[in-house]
Length: 341
Ligand SMILES: NC(=O)c1ccc[n+]([C@@H]2O[C@H](COP(=O)([O-])OP(=O)(O)OC[C@H]3O[C@@H](n4cnc5c(N)ncnc54)[C@H](OP(=O)(O)O)[C@@H]3O)[C@@H](O)[C@H]2O)c1
Image (cartoon, rainbow, N blue to C red; front, side):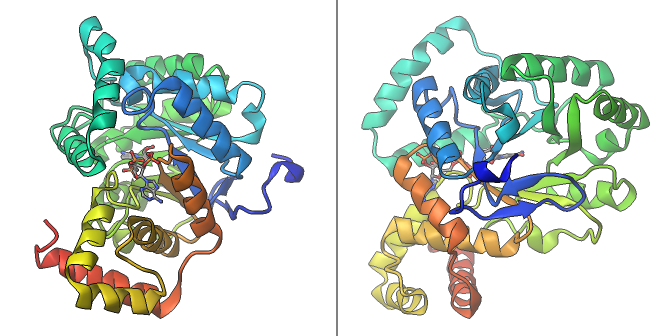
C-alpha cells in the first residue's frame, strides 16, 4: 500500500514473519448480515478505511455466508490498499429461507430492545453455537472449495491471510493440508496462512510448524490470550474480542463503578477517566489489548461511528503504564470475585 494512502492518525505495525503492514486496529466483520445490515456495514467499513484502518477480518461462515460478499463490495476499487483475512473450516450455519427473510424484521425489533439485553441475547446465541460450530472441517477438498467460494464472494483473486477457523492441532498438522496451503501461496491465491483458534492450539501447532505465519485468538480481561502465547518465533499475532465477546462486560463494569462508588472512584482516580461511563471502560479494555499485543493487530467490530472514532483514538493514544495495569488487575479481581456476573 503506497505511503500516501496511510492515515497519519493511525498506528501501523509490520506483522512479524510476514510482509504485511497493518493498522494496529483491525475491523472485525463477524456481525455483517447478522446484527448489521449491508448498508450499515458498507458505511462503517468506508468510515474505518477513511480513518486509516486497513485490516479487515471476515470468515466464510460470517453472516450466514454473506459477510464476505458485503466486504467484497467495499473492496472494489481499493483492493490493493487493504489487507483481507478470511477463514476456512466452519461452514455458514444453515438456516432456511423463512429465517433469512425474518432477519431484517428481527434487526428492527432488536433495535428497540435495550443494549444490555441485546448483548445478553447475542452472548447466549454465541455460546449456544448458533453462530459458530465447535470445530471446523479441514479436508483438502473442503478447504479448496471454501477458498474458491471466498475469493468469488470477495471479488478478488487473492486473500492476504487465510486462517484455519477453530482448528484442532491435528487438523493443522496434517501434511496434505499444509502442502495444499503452500501450493495456494505459490499460486498467489493467499499471501500467508495461519490459525484462528484457541491460544493453546496455536502454541501446540507453532512449536512444530513455523509456516503458520498468523496466530489469531481471543485476548481480553476474561480470556488471557497474549499472556498464554508461548511461541518465541516470528509470528503475527491478531487478537480479537478486546471488550470480551461483544460489549456487555463494558456495561457491567461501568454499572459496577456506579453502584460501588469507592471502587469506581479508585479506578477513575488511577486513570483520570470516569469509569462509570461505558466509553471510558471500553478505552481501558482496548488500551490493555493494545498493550498486550504491541506488534500485532487488535480486532474489533465497530459499526457505530462513535465507537469507531473512539477506538481509533485509543489505537493512537492508548492509556498505558502502571495506571492501566493496576486498574486492569483490580477489574480482574472484581470479576473473579463473581460480583460482575
Ligand atoms: N475464531 C476467531 O478467529 C474469532 C472469534 C471471534 C471474533 N473474531 C473476530 O474478531 C472480531 C471482533 O470480535 P468481538 O468478539 O470483539 O465482537 P464484535 O462482534 O466485534 O463486538 C464488538 C462490540 O463492541 C462494541 N464496541 C466497539 N467499540 C466500542 C466502544 N468503544 N465502546 C463500547 N462498545 C464498543 C460494538 O458495537 P458496534 O459494532 O455497534 O459499534 C460491538 O457490539 C469479530 O468481528 C471477528 O472478525 C474472530
